[in-house]
Length: 307
Image (cartoon, rainbow, N blue to C red; front, side, top):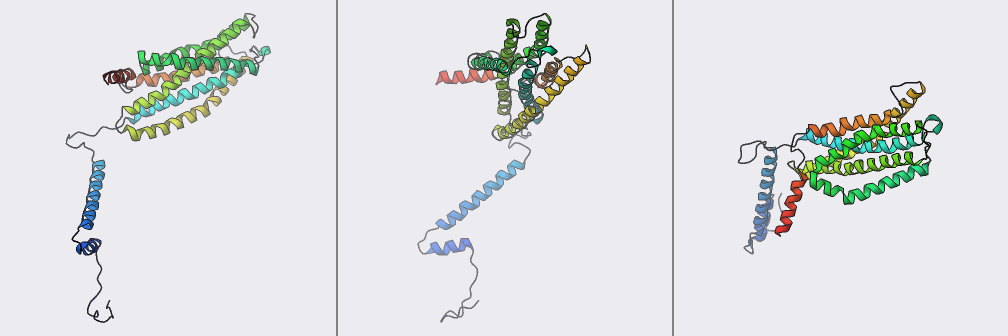
C-alpha cells in the first residue's frame, strides 16, 4: 500500500508483530518492559505445556514407578454400602408404621397415628442424645469400621425378632395397647434409631475417610459425593417399594394359610438386604482401605499437645 501524502510515496506499509511494536514503542525511553512482558507470557505458556505433559505421563517423575491410581472398585463398594444403609433406614420408617397400624382383627396392633408418631419422637430423641454423648466415644475407642459393624450386627437380629415378639404377645392375649406391647415397640424403635442413626453417620464417614486415603482426594471428593447422592436417592426411592411388596406378600401368605411366610417377611427381607449390602461388602474390603480414625485422632491429639 502506497502512502500518497507528500514525501511518503516511497514508503510502504508492512505488518508489524506485537513484539516489534513493543520494541518500537519503548525504544525512545530505552525501556524493554514490553519484551519482558512477552517473555513472561511465553514462559507461562511453556510452564502450562509442561504441566499438561506431566498429566499425560503414566510414570512419576524421577521414580520410574507408576503413579498411584484411585481404587475405584473399593470406592463404589463403599458408596453402595452408604447408599444401601440410607435406603434400609427408610425401609424401616416405611415398614414400621404399616406394621403397627394393621387392624387388631387381623392380628395387628391397630395403633393410631399419634401412638406411632410418639414412638418415633422418643426414638429420635434417643438417637440425638446417643449421637452427641455416646457415638464419638465409640469411634474413638473402636474405630470407624468396627463401629459400623457394631451398629449393623444387632440390627440383623432386631429386625426379624421385633414382629415375632409382638405377634407372640398378641397371641398370648395381651392387648395391643398393654404395657408389654408398648415396651417392645419402644425398645425396637429406640434401638433401631440408635443403631441405624449412628450407622448413618458412620456411612458418610466411611466414604469421606476412604477418599482421604486416595491420591487426588481433593478432586475425588466431589466425584464421591455425587455417587453418594445418587446411591442415597435410589435407596430412598426403592426402599418403600421393597418393604411394601414384602409386606403385601406376607399378608397374602397368612390369608392363604401359609406357615412359611408371614407379615414378618418384610423385616426378614430388610435383615437379609442389610447383610448383603451393608455388612458383607465392608468385610470384603481389603485391610487398610478405610483409614483407622483412631490413628488420626491420636495424631491430632499429639499435635495439639505439642503446640
